[in-house]
Length: 466
Image (cartoon, rainbow, N blue to C red; front, side, top):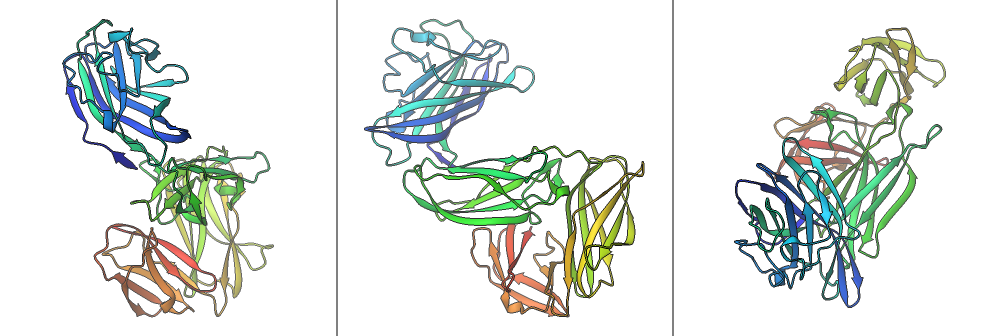
């Protein structure tokens, strides 16, 4: 996100307060010889002792007049403005076709705009005006630099109403590139698919890389978060510009039947961006099960297999049975793990198979409810051959900035560490048996890093360093 302009200044008197004003760039289109800019304006207003009218003015930075708002601006003050928006904020907010302080010389933007008001409690409301089209003189060779003012009055509209609160010098916020998407449920037979759109207002083409991850289903304070255990789906590097958007429609992605509620994370990076852009495509597909299993996996650890699974919701659940097969046809019960019963708090479970079969091991969970009904998970396959590669983290997030992992039947020289933007991180490596300790040599910052094993079936582990 880029912010263009100077610091915002506020002035407030008793009847109202304006907070968190934003003018966000949505798109730019070349309308030769000029440039049409689409922006969204939002702000929070506290009416305090009452409020009737609120006005928004927008200029190019070059023409910005820097008004003092000792009185309401009139046509002479707004002669260079790209546009004015008038809002009735007495009760439910709605757009006005007239500018009260100077109806003869100022015509506000009205047609095609949409307004939304979110009640934040008391007299506090967030107001958002969308589809604000501004014609900026000149071609769209560069992203425009805009400034805006928002002011409000309690007085009835007249030639010189008092200004009760104001925010000035509001810069243009460029949310660019913009990422949107949707998960298609395709009920009842599936498969789940996603739509993805990545757009930019920049007319100059630049290279971006976007990676998709399937969320691990673990909730933090009731919310999904992008983290090291999210499952990598795909990666693409493409050229992006205002005339070369990225559009993907109805793309199938890998998921198990019991994991169909997991969302998708999009991580976009570019040499032209200072920071990654991370957006979640939320999964609104409904899955009606007593246990919501968001993750079930297995890892070969030297001579054992560690199984782990996560639930985000349980209703009348009794216990889990861990089942194993050597041919994916006949399964035997290895053990039982008691469940939490009824909870909407994320739960973590684990089971260790100390004597896995030679060759492929097929694992699944049998979920048993209090009423005796059962449901089985998808199958996890773990290869336990003499030359099977074992590569697994031991603790994540890491402790004391020491990344500990198991590596078996693979050359440790093939281990690399990168930040999320792909930059190589130097490190030292020590070993005890099949357990390795990796220590970054530089004073790296906290965040998400990628531990890579460059074998024939390349594996990547996301590591959270705090």
